[in-house]
Image 1: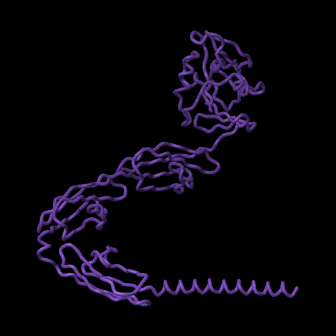
Image 2 (image 1 turned 90 degrees about the vertical axis):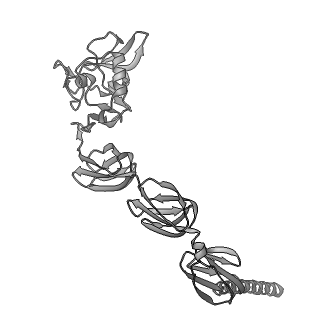
Image 3 (image 1 turned 120 degrees about the vertical axis):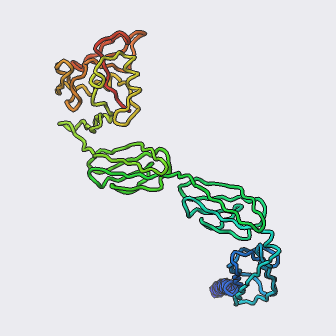
Length: 388
């Protein structure tokens, strides 16, 4: 038993020792990092190239951290100026500051020219040979003679690129007109406070001004509790303000609560989940349609902003036939469909179901019966479109 205790004690001491060594090592490493030698290089003019031991390390103003001390060669250069070079000795725990004032090189300046970049509108970012230089209006000096690529970019404007041939000892002016890619949109609703979604992303509540919108078609949707959702495709044009103003509609429910009139030409059956057109084709067009014309009619329909309307099945027509409910057709006769649907339609309703080579099934909403009719030569027929 004593031997076991001595072994456990030795093991614990070994673990404590290892942990101590690890902690000491980490502290030493952190201390070493904090004491790394540093060098801060500032120059006049700024944005001058800095080389450490002939290796490019960045542009002034610049702070350099090194892992080791000792002697190093620091050099700074800029086109049109005499270069600077100096031997420095780096020491742990110290950051040295070097201020360098470069003197113009008349000979090199004769190999450089100037470039003035303007844009309309101002405030565009200028890139010279792929390197960012500033924003317009921008005066660039000591640009090496020869061919250069100037790019000008600004949010919501087209990127413009221009080739410029710089001549020694001369200044070239370029003025670039940027093409607008954005417009704005004002969204209003009655009442206020509707949440606005643009291409599915929430943007705020009405009344709402939206700027810097990319040109093209945007899907705008307004949602407010207790009101119907309103949707519209808005075309944004460059440098123009578009407007979307809508009076929000409160839905109307049937007396038994089964059907909901969305007040946009559509009625939803909450029992089946199907959406129907409030008007049938006869009320909508003022004329009868045969089966083939009915198919073409529903395919082109865009009632309520939906374009996926179709011919109903017989089983679906039977679902909206309710013997205890009354409406009237074009002749004033009783048809058994909820009065939330428009009156004045036809009681002969085409279905999507064909029967044989000549015919299709028709549902009589006057008595709930189903008959077959010739698809082309039938009379006094119509269709009530359904989706989805």
